[in-house]
Length: 58
Image (tube, rainbow, N blue to C red; front, side, top):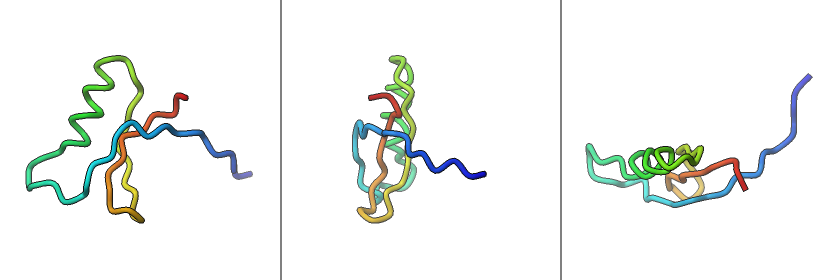
């Protein structure tokens, strides 16, 4: 059986995919959010060619 429920996500910040080599602004932002207790992670939005920092919390 496949679970087809969709979790609500909140986008905390958006970053263009074309960051300079060796620069990870989305990952750094997400790490800062996690340091503050927010369960943040980075996902790629292929349609907009952006990295999104998201949380499943409302």
